[in-house]
Image (cartoon, rainbow, N blue to C red; front, top):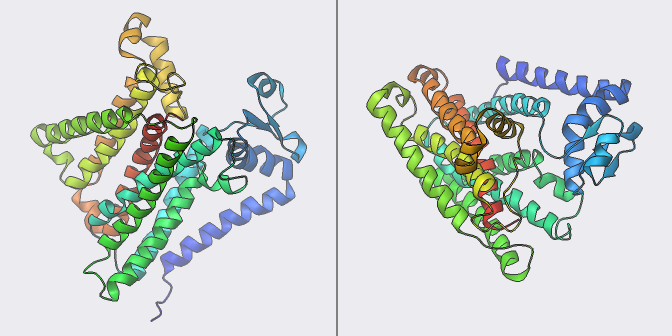
Length: 373
C-alpha cells in the first residue's frame, strides 16, 4: 500500500535538502571558511580528535594534525578542535534533533503508531544502551583502541553515537511493528523493548568481560547503586511534591513525566557523585571531570561564587543537579493536554527526546565510573 506525499512532508524534505545543499555547496566553494572554520571546527574535528585519543586536532590548512598536549593545542593556529561539545555544536545538534524528530513523526504517521506514551517506556532500554555503548568506546580508548579501530569508533563517540542509536532504534521500531502486524505479539511495544534490552545486555556483558579479563577496566557497582538510588528518591520527591502543591505540572504527562524527571536526575546525580566524590568512592583516576559545556560552566560558577569553605564540604557539582531537576520539571509542565491532543505523536517523541538527552549522558557518566574507565 502506498501513501500520497503530504505538503508537510514536501516542505520538510525541501528544507532538509536546502540545508544540506548549503553546507555541501559552501564547503566546496569556501573550503577553509565553511568546512574548516565551521563544519570541521565544531562538528567533525572534535570527533576526529576524540577517536584518536588526542588532546585536540588542528586544521592545518586542510591537513589535520593531532596534538597530544594542552601546550601544543594552545599554540596551534586556529581552527583547533577539542574532543567534546561546544555551545555551537550543542545548538547545531539540538536543531538537527528537532528536524529528525519531525521526520520520525512522518514515519509514525505512515505506520499509524506512536501516539501512546507507552512508546517512551518501550524505548527506555535504547537510552541506557546509548550510554553503555559510549562507555564501550571509553573502554576501547583505555585499551589503546585495539577493539574498535578508527574510523569505526567514530560511530560510538559523541555526538555520532546519538545518530547511531537513533537509527538503530528507528530500525527496531519498524521491525517491532512488522512483528506485531504479523500477529506474533499483541503489540509492538514488547518486541521493541526486547530488542533494546538485548543490545543493552550485550554492551554490559562486554564491559563485564573487560572488567574480568583486563586491568584497565574495573567494577565499582557503588556508583550505579548510589546514582540510581538517589535519583529515584529525588524524582519521586519532585513528582509527589508537584502533585501535592502544583498538580498542573503533571497533568499533561502523568507517569511519563516522572520518568523524564528521573532520567535527568540520573544525569545530575551521576555528575555530583563522579565529579565530587569519585576519588572517595574508589574511582581509580580520582574525581571525574565535566564533559559538557553546561555542567562545566555550572561548576566554574559555583567555584567562583560559593565560598571554598562550603564547596570543600558539599562539592561544586550540586548546582548542575539542581538545574537538571528544575529544567526537567519545567519541561514536563509545558506538556499540557492541549499539546498532546493537537499532535500526540510529536508530543510523545518530544518526551522521548527530552528523556534521552538526560538519561543517555547520565548513564554514560554512571557506567564510566562503575567500570573505572
